[in-house]
Length: 365
Image (cartoon, rainbow, N blue to C red; front, side):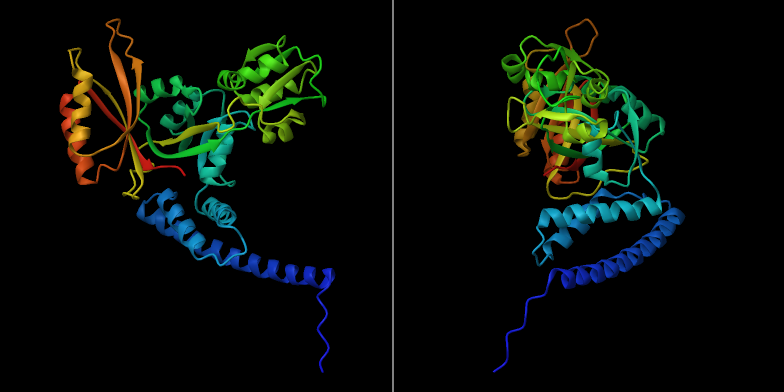
């Protein structure tokens, strides 16, 4: 009768992990060497280095093949970082984001491009647009909509006057935390944050800090940076910002709505990255205006209904002509390469006094 084998002890398991880590490192460097060869080919052919559709395809394929026990979401996150690191060897991607370090915009950029992206921090979204349009950055990431507070109007206005188009989006779950030098909420004189964050936390602030001044700043991370300079100030920002500026998280997730998401658009010049082929789950964004006549806005909906195209967003912004005219920002489901979408857009354009296709891109999960 054979004796049962003893379970491996911690030391032997760690030896196994060390051995596997060495194998992984060898394989990752082999992958990086092939990626460098891909980069040389792309350079000679003049094709884009960053292909978000290719990244999505690789991640989808690898998560489908995942046998476990790693969760699919974790495998996807690992592979995005692997691909980001390899892309940095081919050609580092410079991405303009709202700064300073620790903003949700920075987080959205890292989620889309990976941690190896070369981030360029801007004081506001206007600078993100300008840097991307001027070529100082290859890509930009800007906030466009919050699930509770609605659209970011400045971003919509900038889209009207920029040559950039939208090539992707990130939907980020946003949790606002109260950050401070000291680990309590007593004697707070001012709460500093982006106006959107102050609005998203107004009920909590009214209940718990009714006498504190609510001071708008250019970004939540800027509020955190300033709060680190004055013990009487607090900020509304991410845990990442707390780590960045050495602050305590005095209260976690104080936004008034638990399901608080912000949608970010990834922008670039058309020659940097053209519109991708249909993914099967795409969004097309437009800016249009119509002649000032009765029923003109109603008529916009007719081509969409006629060809079975669903509209998912409809926003208006004043044209600032003094004539009570408006630009309309519209999102529809589908890709212009699909026949019904192409027919609907063709007829829609005939009705418009102004028509601009902002971009077509896969819908964020």
